Image (cartoon, rainbow, N blue to C red):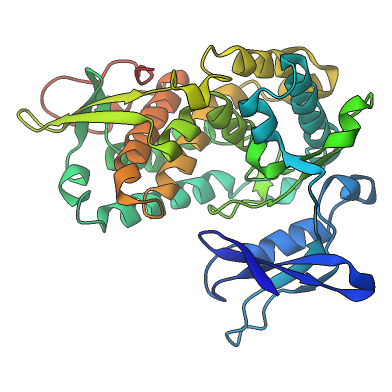
Amino acid sequence: MHLLREGFHEKLFLFTGEQDRLIVRKEAKSAQHGTLAAEIAWLEELPSAMQRYFPRVLRSNRGDGNGHAPSYDMPYFGQEWVPLSELILTGRYEHSVSLKLITQVMRVMFSGIFPTTYPQEAAAYPEQLIRLLERCAQQITAMPVFAPLMRSAMLSLNGGKQWNIFPLLEFLKSRDEAREALRPAAMRKVHGDLYPENVLVYLPSLRWRTPRVMLIDPVAAIGLSRGDFAMDVAKFRSWLSAELLALRLGLFSIQTQWDNGPAFDLCLHTDEPQLSALSDGSVLQEFFGLLETATWARAVCDADSRWGARVSFYESLYALSMVPLVPSWQSMGRFLVGVQHLNNFVAAMNLNPSSTVHQEGEQPGNAQPPSY
């Protein structure tokens, strides 16, 4: 058995099982942290018709509460399986092929996964989201480099005044209409970490009418496996917009001033060669065009008129949850993007925190996106 890959919370090992089959074991680093037990449950409760799109759990151990970390075994995906992210970024295939694969992924989710709903869990969902946001804010405040910034009620980002996390958090907690803005029309089974790096494509199937895809690693670090389909749309959008990749690859710059309070100029360098496949925004535009036109998407989207606005909230939650986990040179970029998206959510829902949060001086206007 040898180590294949190590992530924030899990390790992947490769070994040879019965009949000389290659097996991958995914094992949590700790019995107390991570979401692997939830991932195992998510995979094992899949409807039979959907199992062919996700890793098969050969054997599993959800942990026994006595220090033994959860783990599960799955078949090894060989060289004929390639991440969708690689196919998009390298330009190995025509643009139409990328769109065809994205369509297949979304069809799996909208037709096969999202129809499973959990109405009994709907009542507590907004409070669950607010607790997650509050936990992120507290973890960031505990980081010495962020402590002074988190004491400020407002900051300037790319020339525009923005509310900081804690004022927006208090606003969401204190106003019923703000919490209701976080409530989806239906609680659904969701992937939780859906983006092209977590999609494997079977290369021989590219010649088929319907390509074969495998969606891996459900349940993100924020731990939500049921909730809002907009959560999955948000993670996919964050990657296709090149925002996530620019932050991860260090393709951004930040200028900081503290003369009249915290002020930042954030620029994501999405025109760099590594991101050329995404830089013109056409893939992202076609992705949203797909959700606006495909009949299998409309059945879900049309039943929830506010899903588009909530995408910004989830982009914020994803970005902020990663601030304590990523390298220090990346953490401020993640934080600023998270603050921007949270302000975008409030603006999109026509919510006005100024009536709840009192701050002297200039009030923030509508949030504007970072410079690209």
